[in-house]
Length: 117
Image (cartoon, rainbow, N blue to C red):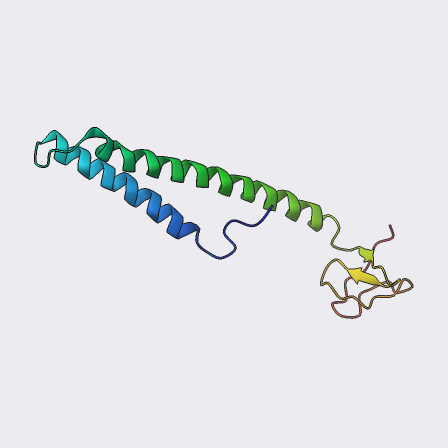
């Protein structure tokens, strides 16, 4: 799943959703006080669209945060291991150094001691 807030646009989407809800509430108040006569669709459309945007985006952010938590827990448990690469070398899970050899007990770059698998 692609990261939702990787570009930092979550705040802008939330601002748009809140702005639409506030706009709908202002139009509703103006219609109730007979300041500006308008059809009901014009009043309730921004409320509905803003609510859907906030609800949908909130669900997507919740899923992303849950996924990030699971991935972090997974990699924290394997931080002191190395993974096999296709060229016969190993990669340190702690720092990502790719020139680790099979016979080494620690990463030459970060010094993480490897536990036996």
